[in-house]
Length: 249
Image (cartoon, rainbow, N blue to C red; front, side, top):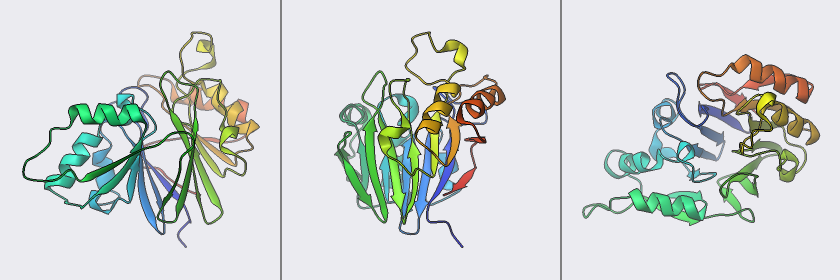
């Protein structure tokens, strides 16, 4: 029996790609939709092992930092010349749209296959059978954490955030949360606008999250050390968001 909600990790490397891990991107699937959540550099390759890009229902991007959206111009090329679609709905912050427009080179021979809609923390979306809502995080630019609900099951993604935001802002009864854990607790006072693994675990525990996975760990980091700190704070098992992993919710 297929789960009501499945989240596949396409990439999870923090800030820049590692040799075996693209930047941030997740494929959120349900019986009635397939949504690309963030499309950082390198995510188009693994996306194609899961779905034809023309079959995407929509793309949702959390913020304008390049490691979270810069594969969109490449996806546009694919949907223009190789897997044509009429209009693929794309949702993101106003700054992300501005940045996309700045690198878009219009073609005289083909219309833009992307249909942009700017969203903010007050937005709600119905994408197929998926209900989406958002919360602005504690980050250096407008950044939207997201929650997806399908048939009584729920998934939350923190995107990038410092400790001034909590998963609880997305409500209760979250079955799976994938939270940023960019650093270890020893760097919590460095002024970096990101979460430590300890802070990610604590935030998920306080929100009563059912399952936690951590993401956005930079290349060269000791992922097991991040996992251990998150587990201690969460009080339970914590998964690493490893490319190719599918979480059934």
